[in-house]
Image (cartoon, rainbow, N blue to C red):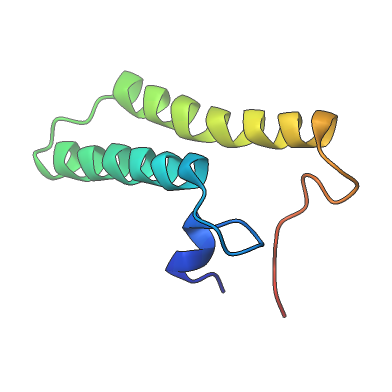
Length: 80
């Protein structure tokens, strides 16, 4: 299980601005989706855009890591 620090830091323990702001963007988008759903204003196209942005960003990140990363690129950082 990841801790908050793992979500925003590099394996060396330094704060990663890319991870930090990426997670802020995901949290904001998810919060907006929750509010829109609560107000019963969610439409299919808005939901599709949300999935495309959040899912597409994760997929693009994995593809870039696999293409330009090291031998462990693209693997989830799961700890036992």
